[in-house]
Length: 166
Image: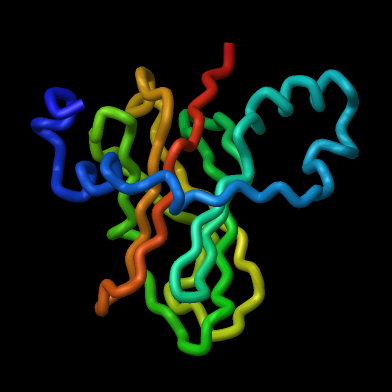
């Protein structure tokens, strides 16, 4: 493991060394996002849902990865963000880090999530977009989101399976 991480950034090493207990898989039943699709589409979409949802929480703020799919040359990670804490939280999504299992930092953009997450907020739904060319050999991804400017809150999603379409 040390040889694989030798050239990785400090953040990537921190992700690789984070204990697995930071990840909480939601075992509560939820309606299938493919329930209203024809059976052939349901079967195709089910393969991309293996291992989801994946959740992490820090100081009352929850980040949840719901699903992963490919579209328009991008890998699209559907996420939800909610603040059940008593203080608003500020995020800059250009500081969001996406790392593969080898510790390589990948370029990503975020759509649909607010920069300021109010206290006791509703659930916000968004998408993390990673160019497919960057994940051609990746098997798992990690997403790291830190509040700004304080950097006291860190949300880390690990073991996000990358299932490639055939």
